[in-house]
Image (cartoon, rainbow, N blue to C red; front, side):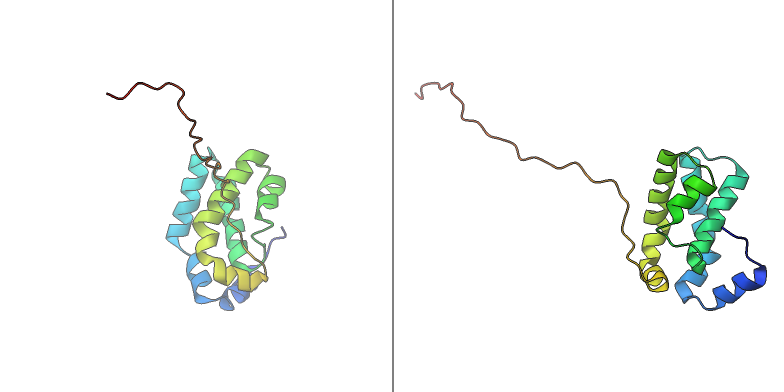
Length: 135
């Protein structure tokens, strides 16, 4: 990702819908990212800053939510499984609540990346061959 000047970023910010403006500077979003990083054993402050910066780029229209995983893996050099887990958690916790605005901004559909639940198979009832006489 290229670096952007403060003026360029501010200009993009001014054009955002209100919910994305609030999310951009939200303490709650920052804390959520911090918690997700902590759960995934990301303790390097520089890496946490870069993850947060890229979430901000998603809010500003500079990085599609669909490309966020690639940035985690390729640019930030996070191992694939860990990057997928972080991506899934950030998508679920941060991007999904802002889905409508992000979909309008990018003209895409944002899908949940939750892991598929195991299919529940119906219990097969077999006839019991053992019978006691009824008295």
